[in-house]
Length: 122
Image (cartoon, rainbow, N blue to C red; front, side):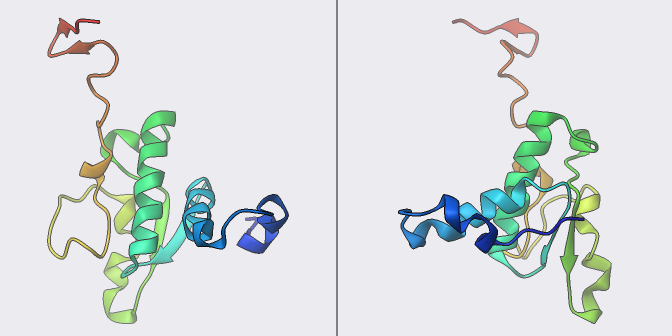
C-alpha cells in the first residue's frame, strides 16, 4: 500500500484556513481503497460514512450490503470489532462510536426516476 499524510498535500492547500484541514483530511482518507481507523473515534466514523456514500455511488464490492473496506484499531478486549465494517450490522447502542450501513445503504433508491414502480413527476 502507499500511505499518504496531510503533509503530502500541504502544497495544494496554500491559503486555505487551517481550520478546514480536518475536513479535508477526512475527504482524502475516504478516497482510499482501504482505510484503518480507531473504533472510538468520531473522526474515523465520519470517514467511514463518506466511504459508505462512495461505495454506493461507485457500486464498489459489497455495496449491496453496505460493506466498506475499512478496519478498526481496537484495544485487545475488542478485537471482535476489528472487522465490523466488513459485514452488515444493524444500528445498536452506543451510536456515537461507529457508523452503520443504514446511513448509506440504498440511500438513493428512488432517484433514478421511479419510486415503488411509479414514475416520479418532473
